[in-house]
Image (cartoon, rainbow, N blue to C red; front, side, top):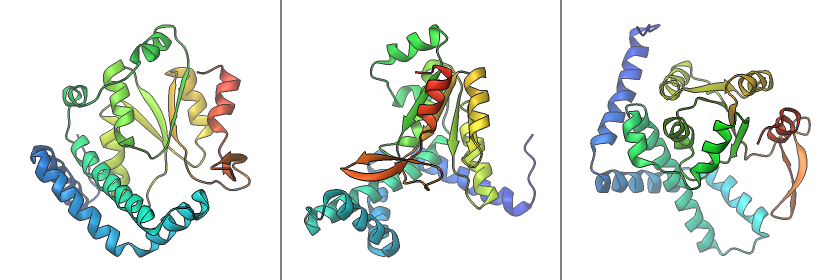
Length: 232
């Protein structure tokens, strides 16, 4: 039985679940039209992140992109972000059967073989595509739990919503801060962990690697765990 700290928290989570059902049963063409509208609205108003995105594109491509090209990429980024958010609302009220119907794996036999042989597996990805569906798609298709790392939000109600949505699909989430010990335990116990790592890290946390011919810092956590625990 769920226990809520306050009536406001109950209403907040009830509202988010309501959004989930609304988006889930909304016809796709209407859902996608709404997504495009919200994305364009954010593109027009979100000046701070737009500035960061433009600076990153200039950095990565050495100012070789035209202004039109950069803004087309920005619009696609906002569209993907909004659709991911709507997809998560839908995920919170979805079932395993729906996940199986709406996702598929290419070369899934590779994962099946590793699981059958009792191999340890480390999945690494970026915030690319529909990243929120990667873990539930895995657990539903292969009937195996996964432990993943995520950054917690400052809002405890939002954190509860995120954790409850993921846990219903046998996904355990570890806070990014101090996650190493938890990952080691999960790797030894359930043998499958995942991490989304695509941001520049602090000097104390990352190693210099080449990315777009630039020196950037990237976390070595997946590589270190793979080497130490013989994980794929």
